[in-house]
Image (cartoon, rainbow, N blue to C red; front, side):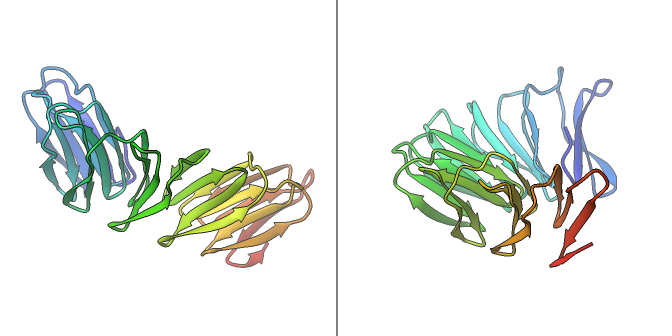
Length: 239
């Protein structure tokens, strides 16, 4: 299981769980007679269930016991993890070494990204935990939501928004089906086929002509308009 800055793996010979982190291999679990049933990597986290059924997380060079031996729903991202403790039915989160109870009842759905957690709680309210601060977006569940990297992209009644830098920002009032997210940027085609980019809290028009293809990597947007017309948009300039 691989994250951006670590690799978790099972050593068959030693029957141990190990992680390659910060330039060296570290043993984080022993007495594993079989590979763990669950092992999920965020970019700098590794969430796993030990041989006794306890949910644990490797983060910043250390293992933390998350305090439950009965977890069937969990997710992990960079600096963050979330799970439902089936013993108490509570919804809990881990963020940068701290643990907290978020809800007394299991959420209907939840997803983790880079330092961010979005979920629909038991009553249907849509909430986002970002940088340790919990924000209620709406008392109604969104039609859809995606958490990728450091961005939450969601919609209500055909209105698409992102949660960025601690606040919701409306993007479009038309249905979006062709989009890509990388880091905290969003590239997409609007209802007219125009290529647009959300970056640094604002939407920019990149191309009025509909591209044949486009690809967003980090803050670099590549797009192709014709047979050999390749363009790159980066930091306000097109090349």
